[in-house]
Amino acid sequence: MFDVAAMIDTLVEWPLETVILVDYDGSLAPIVDHPDAAVAFPGAIDALGRLVGHVARVGIVSGRTVEFLARQVPVPDLVLAGLYGLEMVVGGDRHVSPLVAGYGAAVASAADEADARLPGVVVERKAGLSVTLHWRMTPEQADAVVDVAADLASRYGLAPFRTRFAVELRPPVAIDKGTAVDVMIDGCSVAAFVGDDVGDIPAFEALARAERTGRLRRGVRVGVRSSEMPDVLPAAVEWLVDGPAGVVEFLDAVGHRLGG
Image: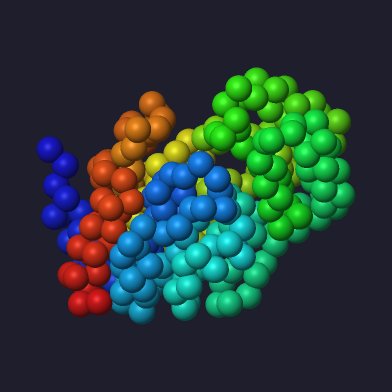
């Protein structure tokens, strides 16, 4: 049986060398039909806020834009990685990967064409860097969305990335939540990541790799259980919590031990 108490002991033993990172949708916020309706679970913002200043770094790693994350989770001094690491906010300053320069026009054209070809489908434009086509509210259009996304990706030189009930079209660069986590754990020896979907797997893999190579003394991998939990998640994590409520309980437990 996994020793939760020992895991929390590890996270509080070297607080000045510890990073705590969390996904947003499905982890800090319940899964909802429309992306604009995703609001942090009660207590989540306070739980994160109590950790800031007690460990080296507290952050959110998400497929959302950093603008959205800063608005929805208004906690000072959070480190934010948005769009799976294409953009980051550190010390209040936004940084966009230079690898995505030159893709803005392609993303905008793909988004405009998706709007025209997929009536009723939510076309979420993300800071001019990517666009996500959601079919959760129009499940009968799932096949059409996938087909259109593949066509747009091919013609505009973008990469399709499948997420939950959606496809994201983004620049074809080697950036994901794993590369974002690699940056965010720099200089620390203990790190935790909490996530719930296939897009979080690279983050869990990054922690496991960092621990295996000795870069981290400990990499804690916490999955979030839901009715939509992907089959690959349990094997990628050490411990599963129940939904955003379980995430808040976990963060509160760490914060309590740290005196936050």
